[in-house]
Length: 306
Image (tube, rainbow, N blue to C red; front, top):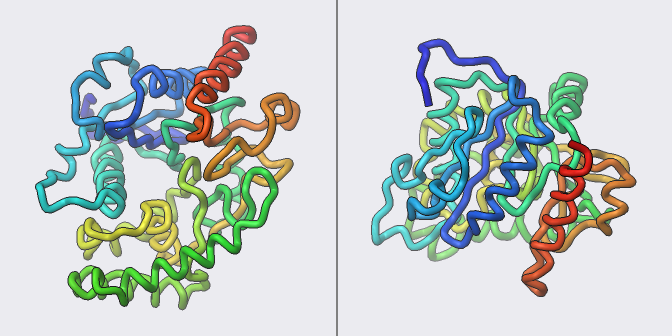
């Protein structure tokens, strides 16, 4: 990464964490989908590499608008770090602090490595939405999944997880973390956030205004959350709410995202017919061969329309 002293203005920054179980060929395919559908001149991707082996980056070609940051350099770990949830958020937000010295982005797309771009420039749709709804800071599969089903029962479970984190024996062992999280929740609730509400983290957009809104809160005590057992997408939603911003669906039937937690939201030909631009997840734990087949389908589409 070349530092010029003046950050380069871009429209969208894509943040993708990869871990020890990530397959280099699949990460390369997700990067290829980004480079095909996102304009190189106004977008960039940062890969937060937590694979803990140099083999991941060596296996993937270098591109000018794809930056690699090593997670253990951002957040040194120790034998005491048995939990990967809270520390995953810490690694991503540290990566954002580093990359934002060089790139002045307008919106962020947090993207898992088992997600794909399948249509052009989804960030244009997100930026338009944020401009028309400035009170919204996060877009994705919010109250409804990409298959149209209601997420609210699962969000109620997330609410219970939040409260358990504070009140459980695990939370009581970390009183500073619990106190910081409790203060975030009180602040977020006072600004209209409903406890447990979140967008599915496989692919979600965050506005720059929301990020700048919660940065002071994060810098004040966010490192305390490294021991949290809460998912990073839930904690990111809490921070967004604490900054005074709302969440909104962007993954319903006629919207550009097709985001489920598990299982493709709809058949492949329907994703194409509905002109979806982002899909998650392409993997299926019950059928390991499924991910390769789905990726091959969309790779063929990229090849045939080149």
